[in-house]
Image (cartoon, rainbow over all chains, first blue to last red; front, side, top):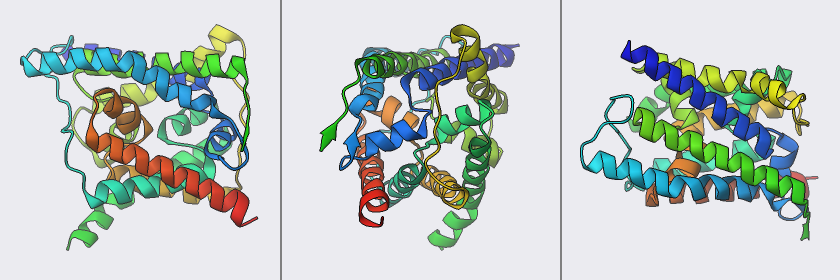
Amino acid sequence: MKHHAQAGQAFAIGLLFGVGLLLSGMSNPQKVIGFLDLAGAWDPSLALVMGGAIAVGLPLFRLAESRSHRQLPSWSGAPIHLPGKSGITPRLVLGSVLFGIGWGIAGICPGPGLVLLGSLQWPGLLFVLAMVAGMLLFRPLDKALSR
Amino acid sequence: MNIIWDPAALLAALAGGVLIGLAAAWMALGLGRIAGISGLLGGLVDGAPDRAVRVAFVGGLLLAPALYLLLRGELPAVRMMVDTPSLLLAGLLVGIGTRFASGCTSGHGVCGLSRLSPRSLVATLSFMAAGFAAVYLLRHLLV
């Protein structure tokens, strides 16, 4: 029962997140490339997406962290598990650089990729399939590199 | 540098950002976890626990365009910027990179920066710098 309630919330969160992506312009690769193209006709509007998200995120994540510190659960009853903030490793930087190159090539990051697929955009399907293939390659690649 | 100022686009970006921030905070307060899209999808690919939550969240993202269409009557314009081989290469790099970095624009960029996490700041600066560099290289130097 509890799992159903959690899945229900997760579904609503996904919907809200996706509507936010669509409204913001993040799901249009042309706008994303326009934002990343400092040397061209620069479109700074997407900086406000992160700005707006962090403006509401700052106080609310503070609340979540304070609940977590006091060992209080989330609304669903599940414990609040937030990842560590330190641990600046080579894999963090290298992974982020690879991701950034991919983002710069097509102008699509994971959320907008899924939203484009949901918009029945054929290139969105190709992007998501390639992204999932990359995620599948990660485990064996990680194993090979750490040997 | 030539800057485009479009007030309607700025307002839409801000409003969309607020919705994204609310969704991310809801995930933390309601379910106790980070709304990281690459992590939630990657865990699904890996067969990680909490399958129902992952499937539901990804399902919500996939159905968001239908809700948006219902609310506003039309979907925003979309223009793809690359051909199919580049699109596939981009997807592959995004998939591998986000898993190595344990996060993408949502997990590090929105949730991590909202938590003032140094780790997420480094990740965000790295992928932003790489994105700027890739666009400069592909759209100015190599054309």
